[in-house]
Image (cartoon, rainbow, N blue to C red):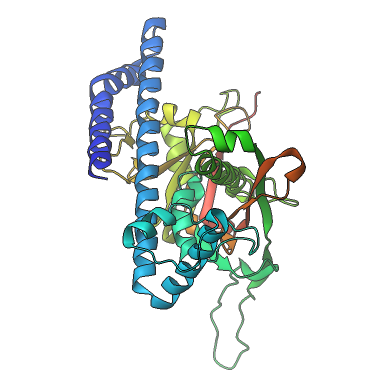
Length: 405
């Protein structure tokens, strides 16, 4: 872990230095005049290099989160005797089934830590290893790396079943009125609507040949489990951001309303004024806990923007685990949000905790020796049930590119 943290700090420092020595001089030019062809080429190369640093930093941060999740889950087992005994019993059944050895087994701390890395694998008879409810919190942390919506602080709700969750939401707050003595008190009523959280199923099914399982020099099973988990996490991240709604999750950018529309014929380009207009399109109480969510392609343009004091709005993070900032607020990039274009919603701002994400239990990743018996394959299946809704449309607003003409 120490080596990973050292490398992470080094990359953060190198990225900050690259911005100061290469990025800023070019953006200073862009604030005064248009780039020459050579300058544009240099800026594109610098942006690609900077994005490369960012991706490597995210990969290391994901590794750190996974290592912490394993440690925290192990600590939770050690502190809860009942859960620990239940987990030991489950581990015994898994190892007995796979190794065909006596059930009279004991585990050392080292054995437990090694086994915890594969706890997401289910048994054929029981349909999956049982785990304490606390395990979902450890699942959420790695998932944040696949979803900017989760990373920006969406509220997490966990339920034991997938029944629809119907919740009232405030449509209009109503208004008070001055009341005079002896007269009926006036004012207007608040109006309410209903929001429903469903339990859409995200999953992947994969068959691996017995030859590959037996003959590979690497741990194919662990690789397959990781791939299934990552693929489900990536799909969830996409739907939480831009899901179409109706028959699937309504993503944050789909459910949000437009806070500012860009200039006509600008191909979705935005200015400093547009940033400020979007920021102030949400009520002041929500701005205190607000974050920016940007398309990857929009961040490059945001790096060029300056405020009225000739200071850059965008500032790179120099601390592991902390996001970059735009105009003093956290900035999260999202690969699924549309890049700037006519009519495209390329970034948004608001209190993301008003977007609620519902999980049904935790992700299940199961293994079967029998499902593909005829083709001599081992089957793996991953399933996650989840949904998300924006509970207050005034809490998050998006920028939309103007029309073509």
